[in-house]
Image (tube, rainbow, N blue to C red):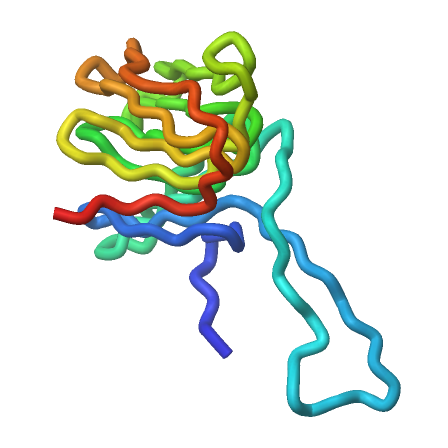
Amino acid sequence: ELGNISGLNGSLLVDIDDDWLYSGGVNNGIGWNTEPPCGLYSTETLTRSDNASQGTLYAQNLFDQILLQQYNFNGNIQDVVFYGDYIIAALGNNGIQVVNRDIPEETTTLAVDSSLQTQGGFVNKLKLFGNLLFASSRNGGIIIVDVSSPLEPVVISAGNTENIEGLDIFR
């Protein structure tokens, strides 16, 4: 069993950036009722995470345990990446939200819905390559966004209809 870090919550993601450990998002699960109990497998299974109207990202400084931060987002946090002073979060059906780490009131949201492409999308994974953000969407393909001005993101490419569950960049 893993230990517990006081002040950190969330079960969907854990990430490190500089001196900070981040956690957030909420997973779902299914419980199995077997009679008699079977010791060969777990009675719980994780499922895809759901959408939510809000979520919190928790941050703990790794070198000073007193330093804690909380960032509120407009959906269940699926994934995060960091770009300078900004946290960029994938929020499922609520799109992509950018928040300034030092001034959390400075925020913007990029909707990934039918106004952007034929099918709206459940944004679930993010990868950053320089100033280009690649976002995968369960039912909307891959969206590419220029985040060189983080509070004014510019969509470079969108409109695919493939189901994309994950994302990575190979060099």
